[in-house]
Length: 393
Ligand code: KIV
Ligand code: ZN
Image 1 (cartoon, rainbow, N blue to C red):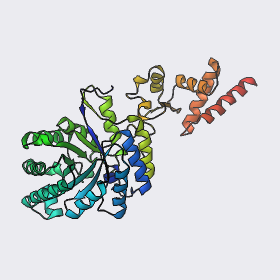
Image 2 (cartoon, helix red, strand yellow):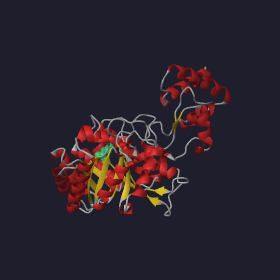
Image 3 (cartoon, helix red, strand yellow):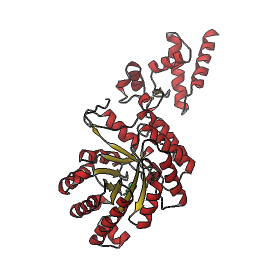
Image 4 (cartoon, rainbow, N blue to C red):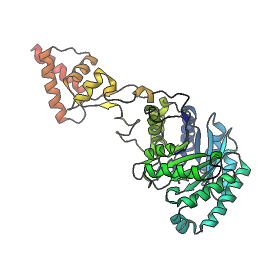
């Protein structure tokens, strides 16, 4: 279903170049990052998190260069709750037409005790200090409560209140360790938005990791709870099991517009191209059965499915492959394929067999498919030519 203007606009914040690149072994060169940023900008991503400027000179350079080149997207950089990080980030994003400082601090008891060695009051002071410092550098400031989903709600309310008071324009409540369930995540947003004074002065954001395979479901649940920005990555690239996948979120919103009254400004035609680009740059191949962009996402082998697809594509496809940049559905010939699809394949290859010859060729094709994992067009051609020779003898 196509989006209409009555729907709520959801901002897509892509963090492939920051959280995605944090996956062990996924680091990308400057040239690769520039190319990915270009396609993200072109496809309609609202905010590109281009890197972590304090992390290295290379990261700083990448964020600054992407900031200089971006045409439409806001360019964000990440900064810990440390003055040097915030200042470095401000330096890198100031070249963007629209720049953002994204600063974060942990709020959960386990992080306060083992990572920060600070108490709750000290962390509240840090939030006040660092959000204020960021706002003195730039108007667009996002503040994240790291490990929000394992933070007691009363304390989280106080943290969010402090960040908004100091001028944070986006409040991100991440499920940093991928621990939440959809109902819990939705309830957290509802409560925070309801309880925090002036919560309407900020946009709330979801940021979900996929440790339990719930990142996309949780992101959509957070939106149902009132969030209006989704943080995600191409191919779901990210720390450990990854982040919520951008292509899945965008297509879920487009395909289920009947019950998800939202729209994004992403042009889905770019999704497969962006996926291939990120897979190539990161070296992380996309699994065949990955939703939307996997090699098999629009491929059918079973006879029943192929038969249905030949009559009406909607029998087994809920999205059109062309919409996400795939040329066409593919009917893969294998041992599960039926006679109907086999005859269609023969026609495509330029063969028209009579009933008996077709029957015989189909039987030999099935025998071949039992022995061979992949049956290519060339195998079918050879088989049919053989059949024709046998008939001619
Ligand atoms: O997962 C997380 O909490 C993060 C923050 C830095 C936003 O990536
Ligand atoms: Zn993250």
